Length: 251
Image (tube, rainbow, N blue to C red):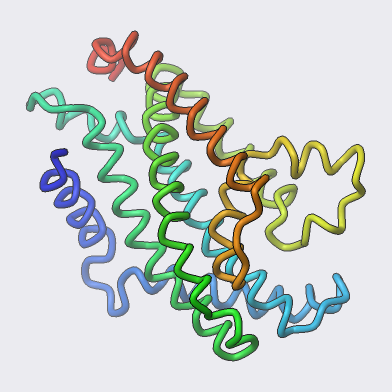
């Protein structure tokens, strides 16, 4: 409910990071754009897909992946960087988590320009009324992002080695999660179970990517995100409730 505080904190952090730059947060969009066109020129032939089909798929997957990876990566320093702040002031720790999600969402909106440009060039039909479903999908991502930020923030503050583990896991997850390739390339049994069916990152990517591609998210995707949200919040709430008073002493 203290949106004035976390919104201000998130906005000021974005301004601080890109101070004295010309295009500011759009540097991330430029990086994604170069990556999409470089990989897309190879991937469309490698996966036997037309550019009109593969390029929007790759661009939409990348902008969502960057949103998720930035959220997870920055969660590692959530309470470590905020130590000086909550040592001097009395406020809810969750304010830092909401500020983090807000600034990553600002970055996502800048990166979304890449997808819109790619879609207009290769597949304008993807931009339809169904695309508006991306709004509730982003709300689901933000809702999950808060518990992810709090849980990982607490773990990394208590056990500093967790940050390195998260970094390694994300590097691996980027290649085993269907971002560059379609889930249809994985056999129905065996590998598909691990990289698709029990991969929470796949559901979080797919629930946003589907509307961007002019598709309604499947029931399996919606149920998967719902399950992740409920279980994640229940576990995080219990951890936060039990260890909240120790956060200041772990710094």
